[in-house]
Length: 258
Ligand SMILES: [Zn+2]
Image (tube, rainbow, N blue to C red; front, side, top):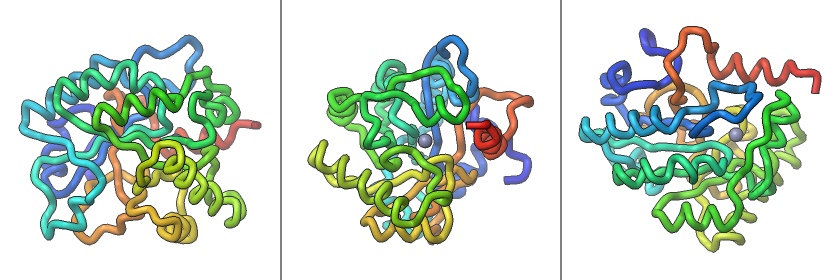
């Protein structure tokens, strides 16, 4: 990853590394930032999002879903295919992301927090006194699915999985899959570790729960033979020299007195 910017902004910088495997992109929130937002870097404007999608489309890239995984079905990396992921299930994705995705014929997956559908980003508010933002409710998620997109699980309450007892972590992981399958009547194959926080034990819980893949926040593209429960992703952000790495951002969160 030497020589690459910390975050994905435009294809130009990533073209050669994207050609070596399956790139997975991470987004959190799209659209205008509400007043008093602290984690500004988790927002991408609608215009930047549109620009990124247009750039991929014009360069001949298409989106693929995590399932069936192109990595397990092909010996060599798929050509010019990428996966678009959204963490947490924010309502602003539906509001500002759905149309640009449709206009480019792209599909994406949202990782949902199953106890928080239609609620707010309480984990961000507690950790960083973040401004309140709403998460998609059940009918909005149905709208997302009806548009041909996918959903995956991101636990029940967004804990740091390595910091809670293993029995609690198991319930967060298994329970989120069960709740989403019951609500939406479809199999949930994909998991995403909150804060990118995982360990071999947490990874094994995800596999044991019946998921097919799990996404981390470790940067890189995915090549044949990668552990499907340790998929790498590039985070999409504005180009900036001042924003530290996502890992540093997460560390800041946990240093909050809450
Ligand atoms: Zn998250």
